[in-house]
Length: 429
Image (cartoon, rainbow, N blue to C red):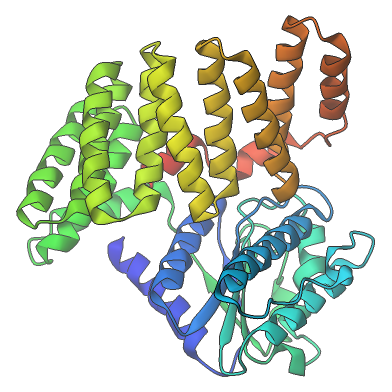
């Protein structure tokens, strides 16, 4: 499967670099789109010639996805302006009101944002828009939002200098049905299949192929170890992680060592050996620090905090969740930041720091409101309502309950069918 991943990454690179087609439609499941998003994140880190705007948010209710995109874009402009102020450089103009007004047609709001971002950049800088929702419940709303980017009525001047990556679904074809494909003369289309079954078969083949470079076979071993762990094959996962650690140590690769040591920690966690897990995660964090990879460190900090929580040592858990929250903020990962702050509140409550727990959950709720993390906001409101009820503050508790009840009910059955579970996500790490 490594070759399939490489081919997909190469196709993304070809689309981004070619001058003739502004839009790429990716036919992908929820699992597949996560991998594509990670490929684009890696390109963003490597590519100094282009600006990448990545929007992986859930598309659940009408206007929900676009609102999150606009909030994220506004936050990125604000962060850039803070840096420009420190350097004494003139600030970028904020998003026009049309972009942020939920009463306006979504397609017009997106078009206005595209045009505005163009004015912020030099003419020779290309801008890559990855409008790739992690789940699509509101298919109609998403289609209406990105419809102008398909250029079915012809290429328009405002699209010049941009590349748009959009999402479709091979099973539903909600964005570009077969009848529309012939009209989409300015669109490239690519269907993906990284299903778990196909992935596992390809990885086993890659691992056992002696003709392949050893580094490629080790990468397959890393992914197979995660799959073994996901499916409860503890001994097989541990054997592969130990092999991987030894190999990466010989190669003087701290990132590979961090991932392998973290995997050993995950095996210990899965086996209920939380003290051992804490020890392995600590070693992994040392290696991650040497590698300079903050994303890997974030995952290890979260795992460490959870392991210390399992050992009923909230004071240690608090340390790791606080660090995880800061790392997520630095990486601009709002969902991860909210997750860290929610777990931090639980640890604070376990340490009998009720006021601090309430503050952490309140701050996390505000972050949810800023970035549209509705499912996480619902969970936080439940925690706050319970906390204030226990404290005898019935008025505040009722206010949180009423706010929770105003959150639209998601179609859980559809969402569950489309969204990958935590174990599936972990299996692809």
